[in-house]
Length: 577
View 1 (cartoon, rainbow, N blue to C red):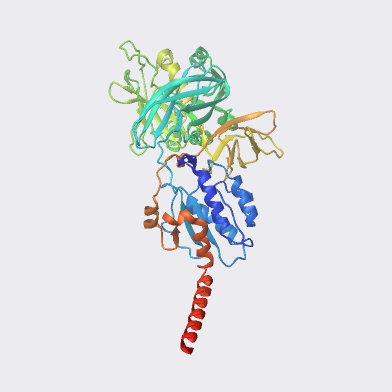
View 2 (view 1 turned 135 degrees about the vertical axis):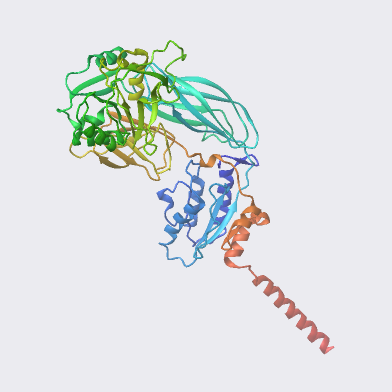
């Protein structure tokens, strides 16, 4: 916000001038701490008057955002180590409403003075956030990106140009009209023709506050979607055929009695097909897989062991299944509002062939569990249901997949897109961008295989080691108080091998350019916080000097003494006369 103007001068320059005036009000032997929102190490010490003025000259605008209370807390950390008997704090700020939080400040050990900078109220438009519609980006498919832009001003913003740059190419999105004090969400379609990591940035045109006009983001496109099919006996040829027809699936078939549970996290989708009895071990591992973000689809066989299956379903949790019914049923309703079937069919025509079955289990409908119907029979019972569990999703089909009981596998216009959307429908998607200074935890795949290795992050102008914690197949990175530049950062163990890409953006907290006036500050601040405003700002150095040393009265005493002496002399002269 210090990019805003006051009398055609950036506020940061006004702030530096006020800081010089304050420093110059004190003696050469006094000690100073110069502190900015960056909380840099060089500012965490007391310095001489000359050094303080030099530090003030070095100050530049920064995207770092702090509440006023955070600044005071930081300041007291240094002052607490000082032997100085008196400490006085001067806070020079535009005092935006969303960062000024001293109304309850009651600490009497530090004298606090607020020095307001009055900016011209600016109209500001920012890119608030962006997110993809689907949790997983897909190759050679239109990927919908939603972009939220906000007008922080009191006037409507018209014809705001928005563009997107990715893979080295900038494409105009169009122009936006954003009502005053409102936000709008627009849709950008990104067509991706390469696998791997991608860097992209959204940009809009706005002036003079520009730190929030760009929104960096990254995303990854996998070459294949890895699928594990757990079979009771031989692999199902119809499943294999469906996956081969799509081309982007990489399928592994395994027998239920010969599974390697440690590989489960590497699959985007697991299909439990025709497994008669689910052991307690498999039940636990499948439930954990879902809770940790996996997608699981289950087809119970007609002769399923209900006790083991319902124990597994309870573990997920999902609705239980009831005894198998060898009855012909027709699916008549498809939930096109839900992600799996949304935007799959261009026209919901009468020619769309929905599955029919010659036998199925009844799926319960417990309101407590909260299943969602995707495909429904004519009689209102459920054919395909969806359940959220932890960070993942579980899908349960009421009928076996075999041709003897269902023609779902033969319904290409339903079955193939269903499998694809299920594989990319994880309940939790990784963020495409992070906010600088928000103390977020970043999750990435762990590539350490024994031995000691340290993950590093590398930006365009810096490289650093974040706090890190490895848990099984994941590494969790924590960033605290890093003064990063907005942009892209590569994660690596070895400098020549990029493991992931992350995007960081400046905090939008200061995009709201509403300020407290001097009168509002005086009315809201507690008694131990002083607001220096009005005529005091015109001669700040003199005002501070008087407050710190007292008004210099000795000259008046000398004058009075001389006047008294003169009066005495006159009296004596007249008395003699």
